[in-house]
Every structure is written in structure tokens, then in C-alpha cells.
Image 1 (cartoon, one colour):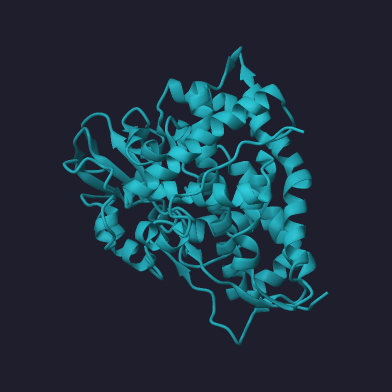
Image 2: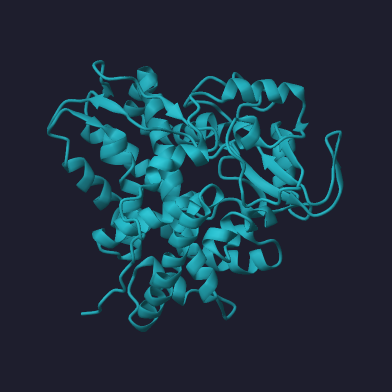
Length: 417
């Protein structure tokens, strides 16, 4: 039997990064009216989004770099599609500090070389297979823990758990290692506001994954580590430091956003029981319902870029070396692109034009897996929790955050089985 390497916990094993989330993402109830006011001032504003929202600055960014916010759909979309000017170098400061040599920090041609290898594993036809073999067992195991009770908090008992359970299963990690992995992965992202803790977590993941990669190279299985280690395009394989960075980032890029996206969709379906019933009766509406949830209150409101050259952009001169806040949350509510943008409508005809998965060459590699996970999770909930509704005896769901959004509770009742 092959012995897995062990993850080392934080020196302060009692530290919970989940309690510090509001420092990084904010605790705002509804940032959208304020974003609408800002958008009315123009498509480009000279401002730092974190400062504007009353959050502490990202301490990894150069202190002297000017900041600009892109507010309109057109401006955000054009920036994402112009990587030669709006570079992903901005992520070198924060993501690079905790994840290392991530494809998220790269530009062409290096980015394209490595991305095509990752994409070979994450093609839709392969991801669909994971739906039955990986996602469904995790989803059903979690539902079995509470379907007999007739009530639940769907965040703490389901949405907060299932995407990470999927990742543990994909990596073939035992549950106890998965929990420490999750804790370290979230802690490393705090490097923007708590540098010491972030660096410690990043270092411990950095010592674990090379050992895991070496083990899977020697004894490959059908897990994601083995697949990525063995995948090549035109004879080129992923370098170890890029692999390590990917696995460091996996919890946050895949698990965290899927947890948030699923929670947002459920929260809005509970607020609109007529739409939930329509979806229960006609599952062909589900793909568009997922896109509408991502548009309406997408898990990631802001994406950053770095200008490589001076540019006059929508009437504003932006100098080279500026930090650009691509406000996807504002773009997704832009009335110039979406009719009645502040209305949640699972039948919205252009819901899939949202920018929540970014756009251009850096569009999310894992977007197909996220959609498969959300589809499987929502179908299982609708199938196995009949008469699902918000618990009238508990506080209603309230989404929180200015950078990333999620409700911390989803109290529901249903017919037990």
C-alpha cells in the first residue's frame, strides 16, 4: 500500500481563515446600488475598488501604482479581450505571492503553452464523466446526512462542503488531509491582508505537493494529479512548479467559487419560489438558471489587470504600470447590456453573456466543471428535497461581500424522506 505524504497544519492550529474572510472580501449586504452610482459617473474611474468600498488596501500591490476601475460592460469586456495592454501581471503581486508560478499570472506566449495542456484534461467530454463518477457520490453522501430531518442549513450542511469534497476525491486525498488542505489553501489567500499567515500556508502546501506529484508519477492512478502529470501536448508536459501552483490554487479557483455560485443560485430560487417551481417542473431551464445566478450576483465581483503601456481608454488616459479593477459585478448589472439587470430571471435570454468567468484568453479553465457540479447539485436537491422552501422560523438568506459574494446561511424546510 502506497503511503501518502502528510500535510503540516499551521503552527497555530486553532487559527481559522474562514473567520477572517470579511477582511479580504468585505461584509457588505448589497454593493450593487453603489456600483450603479459609480457606473453612472463613467465607464472608467480613477479609484481603488477596495478603498472605495471601505476595505483595507491589498498590501502586496506597489504603493505608488495608480488604480482605475472599469465600470461598464463594454469597457470590462474590451479590457479582458486586450491582454497585450491589460496584462495578468497584476496577479503576480497577490496570487503569485501565495500560489507561485500560476497560469493566472502569465501572459502570452507562456500562458497559451501551459493552458492548452490543462485544457486537454478539462475538456467538456471528460468533465461530464466526472459528474457521475466524482460529483454525484459526494452530493448524495452529503444529502443522506440530513434528508430525514425535514430542515437544514444548506450552506453549512451542503454547499460549503460538496465542491471541496469533489476536489478531495479528484486528488484522491483522505478526508483528514483534505480538511487541512482546505484550511491551508484558504489561509494562503490572506497574504493580501495577513502576510505572515499567508506565506506560512503557501510554504506548507509547497512542500506537500512536490511529494504528492512524485508519488503519483511513480504510481499513477485515475486521479487528477496523475492525469495532469501524464498529460502532454506536442511532447511538452507541465513543469513541476506550474503543477504545484495549480494545486495550491485549486481550492480557491474551483471549490470556493463553485460553493459561492451554488449558494447564490439557491438563495435566489428560495426568494423566488415561482421560479424554483418552474425549474423543478422543467429541468431544461437549469443551464440558463445557473448562468443567471452567475450574472445576477456572481461569486467574483472584481478581476485585476496591469497596463503594459499608456492607453487612452473610453475617454480616460491610463498610464503604463496602472492597476486595473475590472468590475465584473458592475458589468453584469449594466443596463446597456442586460434589460432590467437588477431582476433575477432564470429565463433571461442573454444571461450567459456575463463576465463572472472572466473573458478572453484567461477565461476560467474550470468553467465546464463548475457548471457540471452546480447542475448535479441543484438537480439532486430538487429531486431529493421535495417541497423545499425558506424556513419561516429562521432569518432569510442574506448575501455578503464586496469582493466575493455568498450567503452564510440558507435555512430551509422540506418533506423528510
